[in-house]
Amino acid sequence: MTTTTSWPPLTGNTTKPPLLILLGAGATVPEIPGVWALTKALLKWREFLSPTDDGSILPKGSAEDNERIPFFKYLHDQLPHPEAGYNFEQLIGCCEALSHALHDDNGADDLYWDGSASVVSPYSPFMRPSGRINHQTELWKAHEQARYFILDQVSRASDVTEGSTPLARGLQQLADVFTLKVASLNYDDIPMQARVPFQDGYKDLYDRFVPSSFYEEWWRHVLLHLHGSVRFGPDKRGRAVLPKYTSRKEARAHWKSGGAEFGSGPDGFPRYSLPMITGFRKPEATIWEPYGSYQAAFRYFASTIRTWLIVGYGGGDSHVNAVLQSAMLNVVFNIWYDDTPLRIAVVDFSECRESCLLNLDPNDPIGMLIISRLQSKWAAADFEAPESYKFLKWGTKFQPKRFNRLTKRVWLSVDGTGWAMTDGISQLIDVLLGNIPESPTLRNLFGREGDPPK
Image 1 (tube, rainbow, N blue to C red):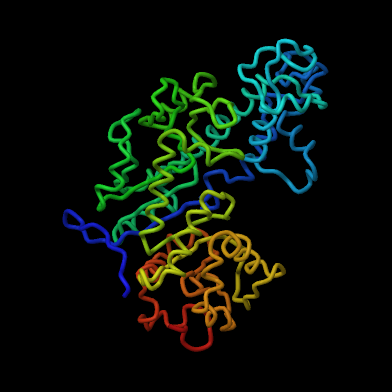
Image 2: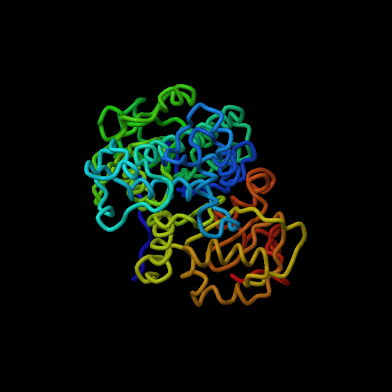
């Protein structure tokens, strides 16, 4: 006996179906700097510099500083295979890891320990630094202030958008058809610039956070800032929840290092309650609010909503992949329990100016995108499911300005939000509503010979 996903009755005059939207860093909003633009800016940031002879990474305010390179550029060049490139998240994570390898030891040689750190590293009994960086407190400051530097870059870029982006306009149109449940991995506030009354859990500003509203008011549009926001500030009052401010400008005024320590993690190190999550330990951020409730709501929505829109997500976050993969496995392997069809539209960006034969191998740029960002990260169960074979073996001609069907459940466009959220919005809505097979005008939408399989 099969059943379908049962959502609570909607209150009010709306019966819009729910739509889960995941916004990744590749959401192609030109005004907002992407990962590599932010990395380039961090590599030039001179708030901290390459270490001096005594191991300090702080500027000395002398002519010697002119001979020193930016600290994160120094880190980048010292890591193995720097030609491969490291992004800002990896560099900040490396800085944080280095701060964990050093500790305060009153009996240690001053050459190695600055004597001002507040924690004891569990690694220290087994190692002593052999490199040039020896001041732990400076490393703590560097990876905290680097976060504010990245946030500031995104915040000031957001000042000039104000709802004019294709993404914001597209969200407005989608909200006319669906009840949106948006999970954003970005720090910008583009979704909040859309004229959509999003509920993000903050009933009032600052720290009156009510996560139960995600589950009680089903008819409301929801926005989950999974990795932080330019409207957030650090929690310096010890209330275990980040404050939210009225504007980006007000939030920026509170971005100062120090005072945001929040307990300690399993390894004994203090955790910082900061307005953004980055580095190697993102899942640990769920020990404070609002990130814990956001992650829980994201998992719940993914497991109960059967229509997804994934925009610009490259599959780089293991905790996000785990949620998507779990929901996908539930649909593919438990069809006897829940036979509600799952439809997933993916919007990415690649140089595709004319139709081409799709080959799922690393030599095909689009095929490589599919393998590296979808199949190998969270959608393997769908690609390998028997019901997807007839799509994968159909001899697909992948076309630009189209949502190309890849599997039983996945459609892909590689024209970015500049097309998908403007000229392509009607096709996108048809895919999400399941109207494609019945629409005569879109019968050959997928670029195959003849009608697409049903």
